[in-house]
Length: 178
Ligand code: PRP
Image 1 (cartoon, rainbow, N blue to C red):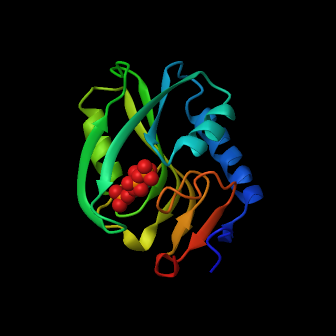
Image 2: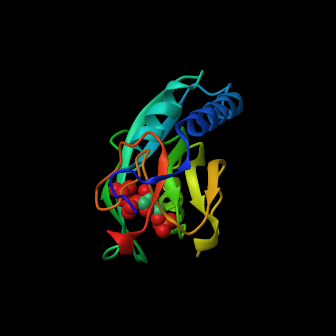
Image 3: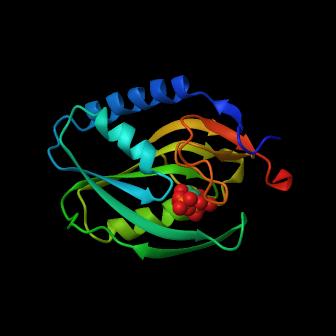
């Protein structure tokens, strides 16, 4: 395994095509809405959020939120802690949570519940990839890019030890090899 060039799992072209499809669906579903707030979950969502938001044909504003979802290393603890909240009032707004990856589902479940307490008009979810076999809690993803397996993925916002976030594609690394 060459850590400098992770093996391609989902190509740049496939990602861009899927992001456009998701953006068209989100735009159609919210065509009567003038107050969509996209909330990117830092750090991993920053590239997906940037591409997705620029392909929408409806008005939207951008917020970020930060949580700490993992314990030590690559093992999810299930505990989620809010590190940075949104800056604007989302009451009465249509919220779209934007995630890079849904693994156990604990983070997204926590965020949906926490954001609903601010009384938005609606809360929907978008995720670029989902590790379906890793799900520990049931959580709805309204706009999903790709289902993947158990591999450790990097690129397009996703990292391994803060490396590879800016790869234009999604690649695979094997932590045991690095
Ligand atoms: C990732 C991802 C989600 C979370 C999903 O973030 O961005 O927020 O893990 O895991 P879960 O479904 O098991 O809760 P990470 O903690 O790696 O932080 P990062 O986005 O800053 O890299």
